[in-house]
Length: 514
Image (cartoon, rainbow, N blue to C red):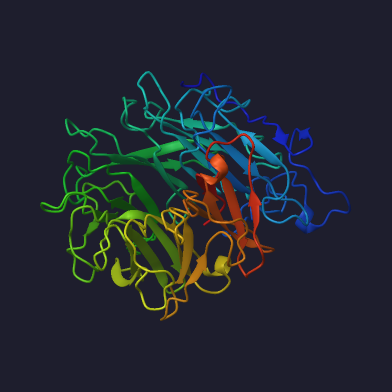
């Protein structure tokens, strides 16, 4: 349902015992750390997640399959506010749906509000903003898809600037609302940098390009300082300079990541993972395309193409490898790491064991560097069929991880003993010459609970925090048929968990900061 008008988000904040109109404040004398921001400070650190600017770290947990007022799979996002002394996300909560006051549209069965979530400071005011997709949104055409932008403010998300609704019929957005496009199926965000305004990329993998079904597309959007769409540009494999050509079921836009790869102009580049790209006669072998300087108006876009047939890339082109899954990046002063998953890779005869290919760039484009999998020397676990290693990736920057850049790999289909699909998480050093692997599973390594069949621990990953605490968020959306999130502080302190009694797959999506 397209909204008639967007308003402010007057959501109630629900705690275990009471409901309040906004995030609670700690009693006692105010300090700079406990500022009750009358306005957002404008100085939000890149590794801080703070939707209300009070100096306490927040996070968002998505459940796109949550029921809302009896409507199945309508979707919900729970805002986990922080408070003094409580740690990241340990204060009041706000459950946001498309039936919440001020949220555009309205909850409908199958909208899947929260299917993708991204948090960043879009309007540079010092409060983190939240981007939420609903790829199942019907807009005269079933599953056309839409994206909602909720702005941070001292009163919490949506209490300041009006919440913004974007679909493919929105002014300045190319394309149009069509059946099954699923606009917003994937999201990537980047703050303003140099000549580039704040940027959101929304993938539409089921977009038809001409007569080619499900070839896929991605829409890049740039915003004014007031948080309105200033311009947008459409990318697909028919865009001049972009390698390949639109083919049925390529699903371009299924995996997108904004980062700076080329370094030639100090502008954002788009990494498009193409795990369903056929390479030669190998179906779903997969590829990666880097499109440079996407904010520039060009007649042809400089681009790079990578597959497992490219020199230096591990393995070889094989059907079903799914090279290019879930691209992630980590910025360091020396250059940027880029990792892509290859979850369908067979290793030592184990089908779908999976691996991750890491590239490095110092401004001259990607260069293959190393590979991680469970047969890598020093890695925990062992190569097994259907682990799908590389299907879920998350990059963690040095200040967040506590010293070293790391690649975290979710393994939701990892069997633990005879417990099928219990799930695990591995964290690898990107900086060290050895892998310095850290293994996490339920019931060990400082992680509470115990592994159960089909829990799928590690289905989603995220990070959140501030200078007081940085945490790794691990989604377990099938835990006890409701879902759960493990909050694992970097530095080794014991974990804590978040749950919701109104969920179907709580922890399907997670957002805090990079």
